[in-house]
Length: 277
Image 1 (tube, one colour):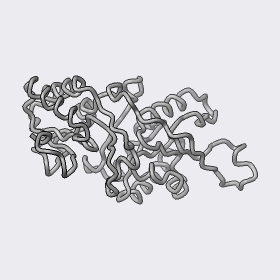
Image 2 (image 1 turned 90 degrees about the vertical axis):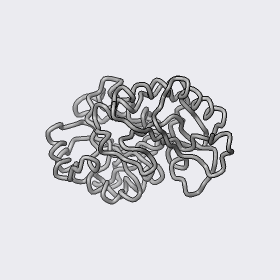
Image 3 (image 1 turned 30 degrees about the horizontal axis):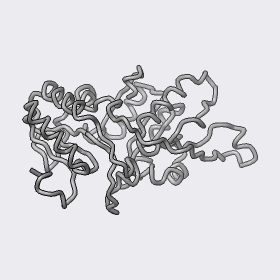
Image 4 (image 1 turned 45 degrees about the horizontal axis):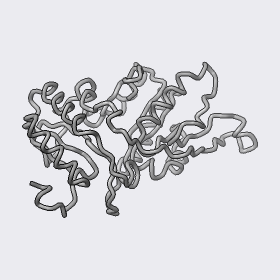
């Protein structure tokens, strides 16, 4: 999304590339970014915050924002735990991060950016007036209104060019998919209420939203050309089979367009035989 709107982006998956913290910090020093976005999860949150502290040491003026399931569920707790972090972009964050980047870019040198209008953002205020009378170290945490879920998923850029430009598909595998593979998403949200499933509860919500079949097919054609050695696709939808009609339409279109890649996806345990077939 940021590249689509003209921002210069470096995207690094440090664990996949076997980069240690020293290498990440060295990269930060060399690039000197104004905005650092860190993906998080509950199992990794302690390490994620330690990384942010180290990044802050080498990039004292960078704006550090966290995204992901854990921080969406516990934004205030996360910001309270780590003063190296400036903000949390809650739930679906594509347009929140874009708005943040645009706001930071437009702020004049030395000017405190006004973040109050960015939907979906929780942040530690940098306004000295807001801190007045609350102690020298007080930085109140502000919680902006939630950003509505994205209804038109076709408006989002494809993820596969990100693989092509920034990542190596050889670094990724899934035990339920043939290697090498790519991970795509054709829909978001899930109407079911399984307690164990973290994504609808924290990121994507309960409403099932989906890309058009035509949009998905065009991306599948792209990945076949971009990655000649590709063997399979993992559709990382919350529940691809949530709509029986759309599932059938997508499958029929893949057959019609001769998309012969093997694919796997997330589903429930109770879809009927017609849907599975």
